[in-house]
Image (cartoon, rainbow over all chains, first blue to last red; front, side, top):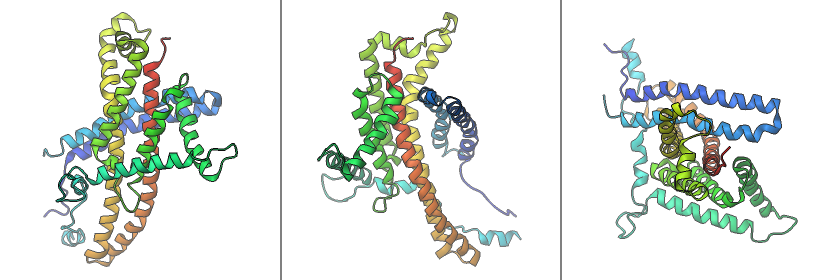
Length: 76
Length: 268
């Protein structure tokens, strides 16, 4: 007797796990930007420039994850 | 116990998924020869271009020192891109790239906002081809800017080799930087926009379609309560979508500016 049957692709669960790291990373980047802005408000422009590059590189992992989740969707 | 649990779970409900997006890819006027290319996405993009052009023409038509209401709105939108994105991010020489950034921001923003506009209810950029096209445009532009500034070989060296790297690290750094700057950048730029719009629209579908099914087509009274709550909560999801869609338009434009500025940067 099966109480609850869940069907679907495990790739989506893998994407969920893969999104943890970039989530923490993006959080750390913007936490540092907020702290830096609080300490030295005039340096905000320079910090945001670096932060956007770091954000893009960091979030690339999550984006590769969602692309691979679609790629492996059909496989059991 | 398990039998009771099973009866609570609707089994004939088809969950929203990638197949929910296929209908918008069909021609708007089926059977009309010569118009097979006009899908819903295409129609929305054309409407967006007309709307944006009309907006900027109307806002700038009667310019004066003391701005009228329409000129004020136009200047507010323009200044947001000009001061918040172009000047802060590109820095030196930013005026040249301002028209591109304003056009990109308005196009992406309007096309994203079509996802919550009642008559369209589908973000144009939820089709991956539009995101690929926009990111490909940005890729060509920032590479051309870099090549025009440093020359082909100088730009290649500038892109793949950050200054101050010791020589024994070169075999490691050069492939990584090439991969990151030339290949991963446009791919992530496109997929970030697409994935956010796609997932956001899917979220709306789950709440609205699931709520409708629970409220109208399933039996126990608790399902009807949950369906009503889901439909009410979908309004909050629409609010979240407005935020995410505006944020993604902003991020797309900021990253374009960052890539242009890093391609055109001087050696330090």
